[in-house]
Image 1 (tube, rainbow, N blue to C red):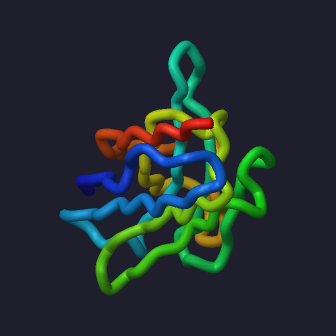
Image 2 (image 1 turned 90 degrees about the vertical axis):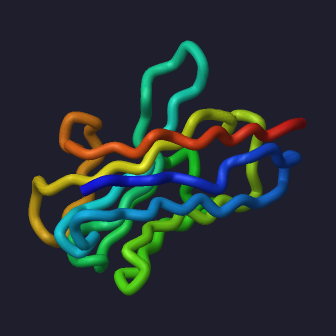
Length: 126
């Protein structure tokens, strides 16, 4: 599966952005999907994800209540709605697909994901 992330940009603190991850080659219903981010000088970290069956989502504590992960199977696209953005959310955001785990599980480790998009930069100004 090939992944193409988009939707990043510059936004003021308190603002919103919606990231999209369009998949091609395979249907997203075959994968759990995750969003990760990497800030300068930091390791890539899990942000949010949705399970293979679409019935479960999981969020990092730092974004819980502010970010929402969803998918549209008909469009073969996963979304990350980001509200109440903070300067510490500034990072390159990556979407990824995982074929591991059970149908209702959201993997959180980077090595659980075999397929990665190219990343989209989100910059939140204070």
